[in-house]
Image (cartoon, rainbow, N blue to C red; front, side, top):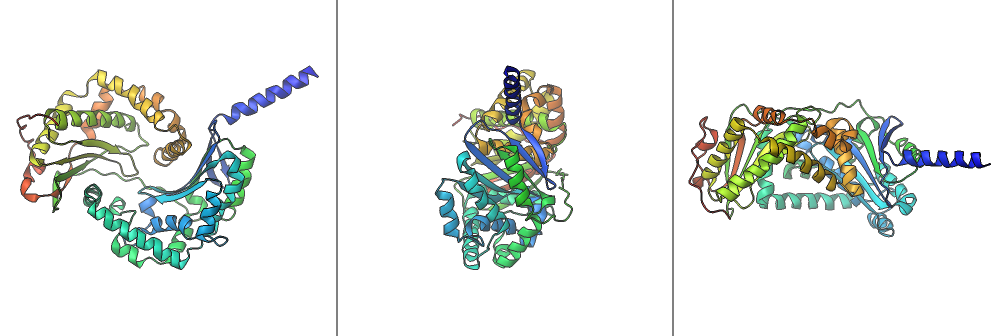
Length: 441
């Protein structure tokens, strides 16, 4: 009897050990990634791959409206208010949104309410109503949001940069759409579009929470049975490499001048990805030091890497002295290319970068986002948990090689007073001389 009891304890221990480790399973041809959380929250994220790849420029905004309609237009079983009230009763949240690379349909609830909330989530996905009256409302809200973005200097600058740098490419399409494209969209066309992309060939799911594997399999099987197989889908990765420095300006009555520049960056599924992350982090610190602290040209200069399906490096500043800024920025790049990043900086950044990434992803929702990004952009969800190990072998030479290879020519855009800027300084081959330093902010 004691042997049987010990054996049962062993089986239970093994089962519990399995449940504490992330795993994947294929259900009806769809990859489902499960990350046990050790808490009482369940987060579900259905990812529709493609983003701006999925529609033509004249249909920009259609995926955003489709996602909004899932939670704002009711279902065939419930009106909008009935659906929201059912979620509110158990303090659950359902959210759907889109971006450049994918759309997400998310659910967040307490574990004890999962049985109650899951049918609502499945209902919204498989039985959306696209009520005509509600669709008019969400379309008007989307158009008003576009107007607000146009009056927001940062949003307007980002839009100009994307449309200038990626002209003729998918990334030039705005997920939020345009006034013209949104006006033409109908409930019928938007629902038809959703049916074409919400298909088993184009989705994967991430579940962060302690839900039994058998229970998830049963729920997923029933959900996927109601989805079409869809057409064969291949996720496209494209490269952006400016062939020359360029500059485009728009007159804007802003309180100051806004500048943004895009250069190249490596794909997230290559070995150059991790050196690029470190270079970007150190370049940001360097830009802050040189632009703000040493030269007092801006309160909040920035530099970063966008690691999407069309990756790029970026620099940004708001300044009353754009000519001095570009002189500082270009000299800063030249110096880094000549001297490289210090070995101690690379070593310290490895530690702080990995720690920060994990710290930022402690909640179920943020962890689901990290896992979905790793699966989508790197093609391997396991990468969400190996940041420290993947950074460890990166050498200072690796970082310098990647920086020198990708950060070269820039596509610059400018919004503000054209009389305050000499665009030749941004496009000429020669780096402008450094300005005289002044007191920082």
